[in-house]
Amino acid sequence: MILGNSITGMEAMLDEDFDLVYAPHIRDLSSQHWTPIKVASKAADFLGYKGNVKVLDVGSGVGKFCLVGALLKSTSFFYGVDYRKKFTEISDEIKDNYRIKNVYFIHKNFVSLDFNYFDGIYFFNSFHEKIDKDSVIDSFSDVSYDIYKRYTQEFFLKLNNMPEGTRLVTYHTEDIYIPHTYRIVDMCFEGKLKFYIKCFDEE
Image (cartoon, rainbow, N blue to C red):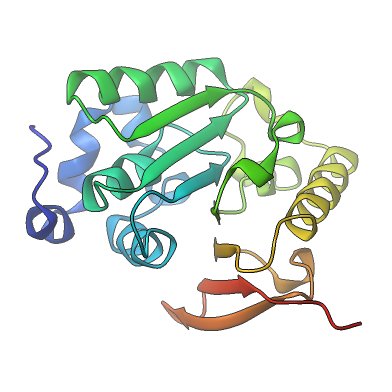
């Protein structure tokens, strides 16, 4: 399977075709853990609304959202952060194999990352595996409500410290984890995908 750089081709591509870039055991996780192409396309349109913006995927897994976004938005830059080294290695390998220049993967826990380097954030509730045994990926999942609470609080604070105009897209994520300064401007896929812009806090 060869990933092209045609926007039309990418938007029309089926997930099962795109996922052929991954090994079978990674493909098996796709329907539950990796962002569908149709969702990634909508999110990338909103976050990459102009050239030269930097978009961060928090908990990027094997990089599917970032890879799709980078192919669709060639003048924007997509960054994925994940604490699983094997996932960032897989992501980097695909990036290199297909010579995708505007995507980068960071092996790090998001808590130590400065969000203010980025113009937009994408979040597909990567913390959920900490409280749901059915969402466990591997031994790194470390099911723990305490860790889940700490991560959600840290995510909230980092979002809250970002400047006015920051764009945020969430997928399968409750509003209670988003600061009130972020206003919903659109949603789709039955409300599962939400689009926010941070506004000036008058309070």
